[in-house]
Length: 399
Image 1 (spheres, rainbow, N blue to C red):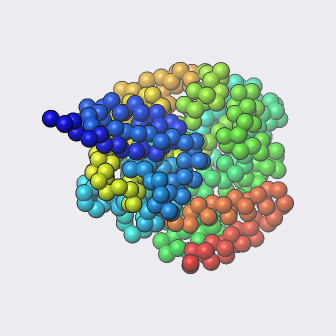
Image 2 (cartoon, rainbow, N blue to C red):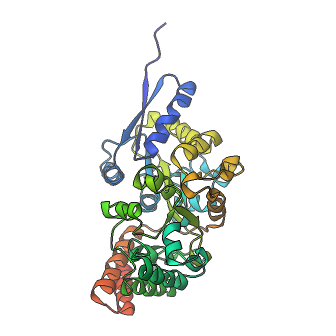
Image 3 (cartoon, one colour):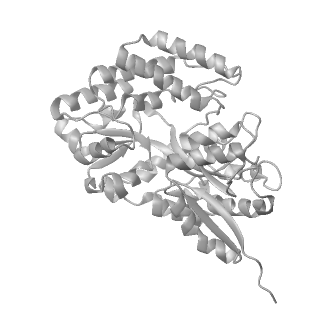
């Protein structure tokens, strides 16, 4: 009897999602011995550029694509990805098994859910304990409020010469995510009206300006060589990011700083998401593979052991609530000097609220960054900068 023809399921991913997928292939082969999984891996930016092009041209589309949350919001408003609320997918029947805000991140304004959360990024403040000790600054001073965070930075800079953070823009990115009202998005409300002159944007710009005026930021971009050097040399005292950054620091950014870091809640009791990965099915991908694609995504996202395996090997914080009772959360983290930080991050994940996505979010982010640069570098008035951004975004949203 002739052997069954080998089917190929192509998964496009970026680091470290590619490793997580590759580690799952043996389990997949047990279910489908005749279905090969081909992983196409590119660096983060190259991957998303390739996926954007593939979705717009319907050429070289994978069967399954990994997407970072910022891109999911952009694609959720288009027609390039399968609506997983429809048959044969029926994601609504399992949606309550995930952290609620992550599902919302993949939901368009028309109610379509276009991707499944694979991992999330509970927001956290990481800080160098040795730098704080030299400066005589406590964790409480860093986290009590945003004003005290900046004030602590002044003490740190004066006594150690270290910068409080990499870039003033990073503080703005967190503060604009605080105080969002139900039904609102980050930049737009439910009627596509821009929100960038609201108090949270004013406060974010004011705090960023205070950081720059006090020379508390190193003016370096994330993922640059200068950024990594700042962590290695102790010239960056803190970093606000997702919990996953701990793994990046441990594995390649600054492995020799083991034991010098600690995780804390973000200042002022702020609970926000910072990053996260999703798996999606392109609408124009080969129809013959779509049931297999959906089964593969379910295995990666709804299987408790697969989610925990990714958590343990790649620090991919699970989106699946059924993992949250695992003893692994209570294990001390050597890189953080034995701190049981996963318990903190689990609490953040549970308390983070959903923020509606908008198709112009990526454009709005660029506009706000441009206006902030004008405030920081040229002294532009904050009210004028935000008013200019508001006008531009209102015009764009009406298109």
